[in-house]
Length: 408
Image (cartoon, rainbow, N blue to C red):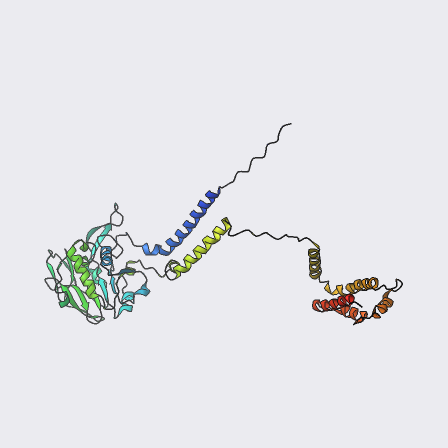
């Protein structure tokens, strides 16, 4: 007789290791998506070659930001217009004369602010992303238009031959600066109905203003950006002079230097999703992550000794009584059990107390009433038969049960 072989086990669709790897990759991808959604706006503008603090192009200011960070000056990029009200010096670098500067100036009436006027025209380098080629000087109307119509400057652009610039204020007397080639400056005198007279801070050999300060508010104007941009930071002397100028313009209560990029089209409002990944809410996020991890582990492995599951249907007389009582209770038939219990007790009492077999009904009740008991049978039976509530019926049934159990 041939022996029947055991059936081959059904192959699994996915191995546990494969499922674990897929789950881990899914979670990592979800977290990465959240992080990118939260911090992607902070990366806008990096590598575009513009004239702003995030740009590494020749007309950008990222070198100055890195230099300030390396020397402990705590630079930060401001993308939210609601964060302009800071004691820190705010450096604004509009790239065109059409940039709206009123949102920057309005909250900083008494706070130090530096505006760097545009100078260079550039085009992108097709071979090197983030690099630009300088194609020439911008039209003087671009620098002239930054403060128009409140203020009108006479902008001059001329060869400087690298001659030294001169600091007018005593605090910067030791500053050594060579004029950029070519030089862009503001012809003195310069006056503004809105901000007062533009006093010179740094001038060229002809007295034109390279860096000026208005008399009615701590507002500074740098006519030539090459004293701060990446082109100028190649020269160690220019870099050192740039830091000295920023320190001199900064307020006494400042804790760093702020670089605005909203005028360069890189504004970004507050992102609520970033709060999840930053203090103080980071602690709550990590706590929830650990809780989810423990919940996931709980589905894979068991914690502690297993508990025996109770039977769906209990066995024994007690279980039968409980189940029957539950069915009666659910059916709403409890009120009808009183009279039936009276009939059961009557028959049991007739046998227990040797009542004559011919007695039935009222005659049997009279015989039971005649027994030497603390209460009459008919009175207890009437109370139980008339009971409606569960508590009342229980008390009456217990009294009848006690009557039955009395001993002579």
